[in-house]
Image 1 (tube, rainbow, N blue to C red):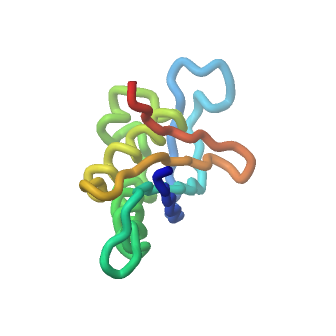
Image 2: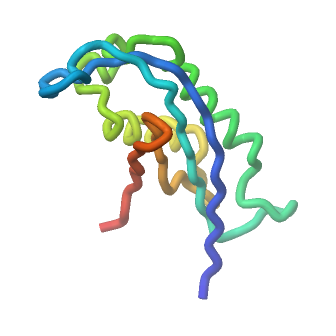
Length: 128
């Protein structure tokens, strides 16, 4: 049996958006205090006994979150051409943080984006 470790960090940002084509209040500009949980998984530990350093994960998550903090998301690529739904934001975070963290020993396994304290979406990719 192979061991699997999953590490999780949290980042936050505040941003406004509006959902085009949505039949309700969210079609108007409004804001959220978003929370992003980034999960990194790996099965091997380094010489220190870590999959990856929490500091490295936190820095990557914060760096990506800062690119959206206090902005109108509909003006920022790719959300200037696709709806900035929680689903699309979670997938974008997964790719952007993965580009910073993924290596031969560990990879971003999931991103959970909290739009409110009671509503979130988790994005992950599975091998076909």
